Image 1: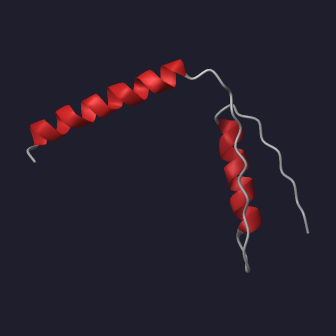
Image 2 (image 1 turned 90 degrees about the vertical axis):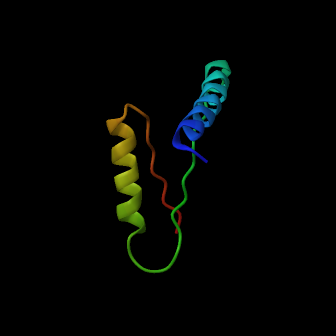
Image 3 (image 1 turned 90 degrees about the horizontal axis):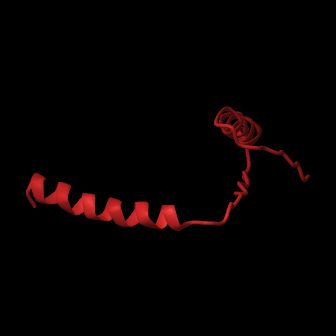
Length: 65
């Protein structure tokens, strides 16, 4: 596939996605669960929360042991 043809196809896809985003009415949240053995879960959770707050989003942390 040529680069020009690829660019045209991707532009059509982008237009469809942009149209769906423009029609979206619901504000939705997201839940991320960090699990597994070993280290890194708390660090990953705090890093994700920090990035969310930096982008103006709300963040909560719940720990279940």
